[in-house]
Image (cartoon, rainbow, N blue to C red; front, side, top):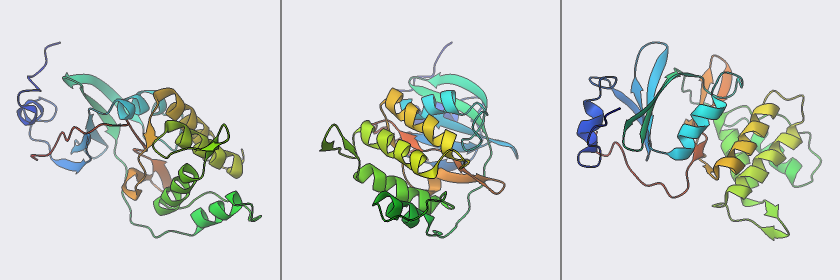
Length: 216
């Protein structure tokens, strides 16, 4: 497969790719972007190793709380991958308070744990467990993957096997440990499929700083 000269002119390389030519950029992060495709799907372009592995390993349709990859186009330029992914909905919802309830449970205050209901709840809870995770007798820094891996596993244990998010959290915890990545925690990375909340873009590779779409 021949690649565009991405290092020399990344904007031109992406704009001229047959799948992206004329497509509208509808979302962007530091190392990835989302392009409009059609009513049922979007194109995701990323040079983030952890994000690409996440789509490859967890987004095959087996977990309802992760997006579904419809087609993996692989490399379209040096270190840049493209995937066709189901279209999800973004909704603005205020925190329901369930994140705080889970945190009180974690502090040993005896509050019954329930699943978080909104993106804000999940961000609040997962940030908290990342900050308050201990490993081998010492407190972990949030920049360490083990802090996120252990924190997500702790949340899964609090929620119990009867909660629908339980298996997704176990899979996410295992993935963080294997991929040596961190969580990318912001409400915009949680979206909806109908009424169901989806962990749409929850991980990030440590140290990545290539802004693919600075000129768009």
